[in-house]
Image 1 (cartoon, one colour):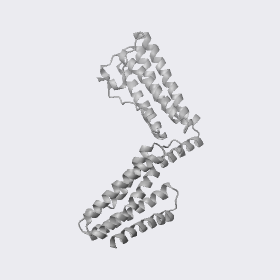
Image 2: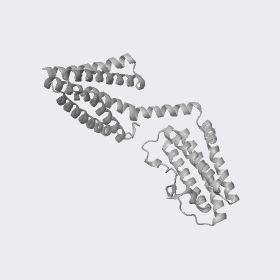
Image 3: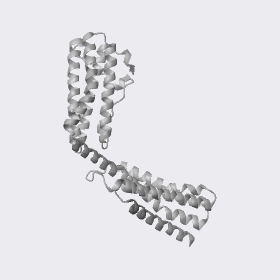
Amino acid sequence: MRDFSELSEREILAFAIGNEEEDGRIYLDIAERLRDDYPGTAKIFVEMAEEENEHRRELLELYREKFGEHIPLIRRQDVRGFITRPSVWQFPKPNINDVRKLAESMEQETQRFYRNAAARATDVSIRKLLGDLAQAEAAHEHKADTLSEENLPADVRSAEDQHARQQFMLQYIQPGLVGLMDGSVSTLAPIFAAAFSTHDTFAAFLVGAAASLGAGISMGFAEALSDDGSLTGRGTPYVRGIVTGLMTTLGGLGHTLPFLIPSLHLALIVAIIVVTVELAAISWIRWRFMDTSPIRATLQVALGGVLVFATGVLIGAG
């Protein structure tokens, strides 16, 4: 890699041409990925890609005038200090807020590049064009606001944001909640059954760890294989599977770890406190994200937890 300060004016122009082409294609890739779910935002990115293409045309004309027809291939990864742009086609499902922030960061970095390049240029026409492009990139923020007003009126923006929240719910909150509920509730019976039957806290810990990890693996695979997301819009299966599996394991390990305490009496008290906190967290999530009333959410979760806990105690004590 070379430092930006080592580039000649010819190389700076070649670098700028490649950057504008790359940024334009990224904007078009984003627009294509957003077209179905967020048509208003997709139109904004198409118009921003057209702006980048115009900048590229101006750079090409000046380069041809100054240095001829051959343009050396100088890429972003060849120059030290520049951030590599993400490959949008690799995103499983672009988040609307993430791509808006991505566009903002791209414009800011390009603006800094043109300002630094203009400061180093000695040729008047090159310095002028680079300075003009720096101003154009600075104006892109205002241009984006204008395009948003034209293509994203309040009702459209509200609808897109609502759709984004729904996608987040389906891809992360719902699978995570399913996993947390399963891990927190289903592992209660084997853990407390082992504790009451053996009176050995470490044995209860081993049972709880095995149950938590096994449930996490099982739930993760079950969620990933249940729906590929193509029809339901629930996102990529492996992401949902990982979220569900991790939350299932976490829910079980929460009240398993107290059984590392040697005293059975103290371990049971701490474990019961942890279970109460877990069930309260589940109730809060259901109330906050699933439109369930606080009382109803608490009663439903508490009933399930009490039944499973009682099952474990009865089996262990018997």
